[in-house]
Image 1 (cartoon, rainbow, N blue to C red):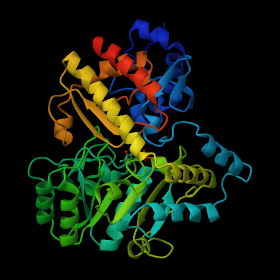
Image 2: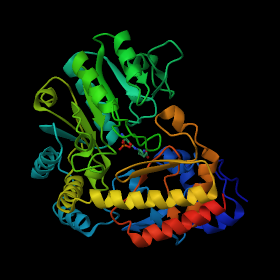
Image 3: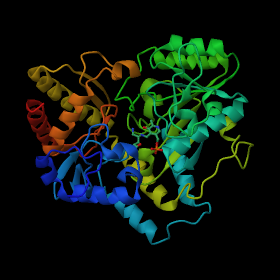
Image 4: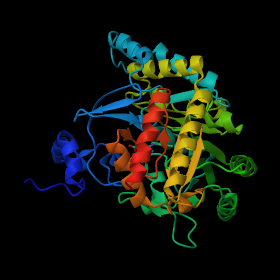
Amino acid sequence: MQKQPKTWRHNTFTMSLYTRSSALFLEAQKSIPGGVNSPVRAFKSVGGTPIFIQKAAGAYLYCEDQRSYIDYINSWGPMILGHNHPRVIEKIKSQLNRGTSFGTPTELETQMAEKIVSMVPGIDKVRMVNSGTEACMSAIRLARGYTEREKIIKFEGCYHGHSDAFLIQAGSGAATFGSPNSPGVTKGTAKDTLLATYNDLESVARLIAQNPDQIAAIILEPVAGNMGCVLPDDKFLPGLRQLCDKHKILLIFDEVMTGFRLALGGAQEKFGVLADIVTFGKIIGGGLPVGAFAARKEIMDFLSPLGPVYQAGTLSGNPIAMSAGLETLTILEETKPFEALEKTTEKLHQEIEILLKEKGVPYSINRLGSMFSVFFSSTKVVDFETAKLANNPMFSKFFHNMLENGVYLPPSSFETWFISTEIKDLELDKTLTATQKALSNL
Ligand code: KE4
């Protein structure tokens, strides 16, 4: 018997369910670090062996072992319209016949930029990139170039991609600056990233007072999705806006997850608070690699080739990705599914809550729009510290029980469930039946 990979923790029963996925995972690990191209896919947080997906359609994923799952990951957010939306596929196909990449300006990019500007408040110009990481990394460089300041403030538990400035954890005790949370990130980089506590305006004011006139930007997820779903309290976003105005700091909303999900105009529209720079990803690519960052003209014109702040990308504004993203945004604009998505998510929340109460397990639930998280903890989750109190082993068991009952949740309690327009009553009923079985076997 071949040596099992250290992440192998399926029991024999489960192994038999996923023979092909298990074999593919063993194979993948020979040529891809950890067998995956993004760590969270490896199931390390929940244990067991990742399922290899062969295809998807609508609300469903179909794995290599001929099993189907109701999908609550939706590729970590992009597939708000469900998988393989016919209109999106049609646009991709027709662009394919015209070529895949030119490295020149195309009208599609202008149409995409104009569409985003027409939907999102407070911005005049957009620069396309290829991922959320690139969008957030570029936004920080632009903020530093524009303000001629070097430090940034981010929040514990918020994730803005894997560029060095963001892979920072809270410094020890009195130190106001952070320390690297990954090898390869230098102390020099870490000293310019300050860590505040989500929903704690005082922690931000303190950092500003300790670093007068040195902070270029404050960046946050206006609704956090990377410590599970955590909502801003009523005063948080307006309070940050006031602090930024007072101290001439740029406010950056990382809307890679919330953009075009909470509303056409994202969190800015939902909460009525305008950022200075907004970053996007996920949904604007319609399933293809796209990121973007946007701001008012006076800031964006600092970008090369107009201004001194350099930023570039071989495949930025790629015509296939623009076709998929443009059609996705157009469908969202035409159908305005946000109220229906909120109703579906509310029903899921209410029904799951009844089952959790019946089971008698400690839980708290956070939800906004089509973002949703169940924490196995009786403590309300308002920041990273309270998120960390949740019972991860219980979540892991729940995750695998749901998987075995045909429901694919994000494989970490520090992630958000994403609801797509293709989750209808049938899928809700199946999900609740699966939840009842999953809780009974906890
Ligand atoms: P990407 O570089 O992964 O496209 O985007 C980084 C990013 C930036 N900002 C926010 C708010 C994000 O949620 C993300 C990426 N989200 C994770 C899931 N929580 C992507 C999944 C993964 O890392 O594989």
